[in-house]
Image (cartoon, rainbow, N blue to C red; front, side, top):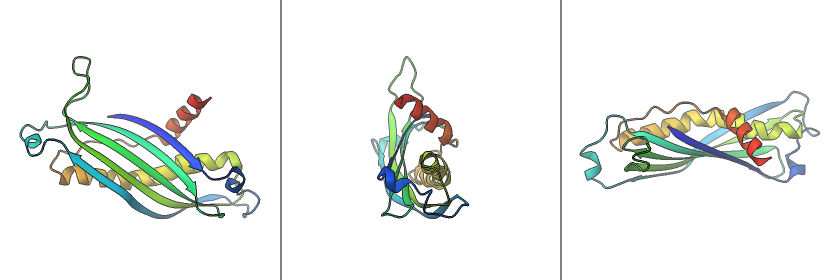
Length: 173
């Protein structure tokens, strides 16, 4: 499985600081979670089903975004996953294998911050911890759609959002 990752948080820096206005115990409050968008494009139907590989390769890109809702320390965090089911893994002799299907989904959730949270901790809470809650149901939706579309379900491993966030921060420096 190939994957890439990006992340962003939007909101004014002053309004993101929740440390002065809330009680001393801090936490990330998980609210509603929901599917925002879902699109599947199956390439070359019905011929694509004639010679399906037993285990297609899946390439994924993952984006995490967060935006503040109003003046409260409430955020919508969105996990966008774009995936391609490929006939085989890209290789040196075949760098662009045949695409079987493409899926794009956005799975989001509402999150609140409570307590005395330092400004530098807000971004990791929203871009590392919140996606950890969103990824399992988003992965489940994606695997169900792939199966319902008539393709073998791939094995999609959990994503280490902390390592990816740290890598992203290092690239921006």
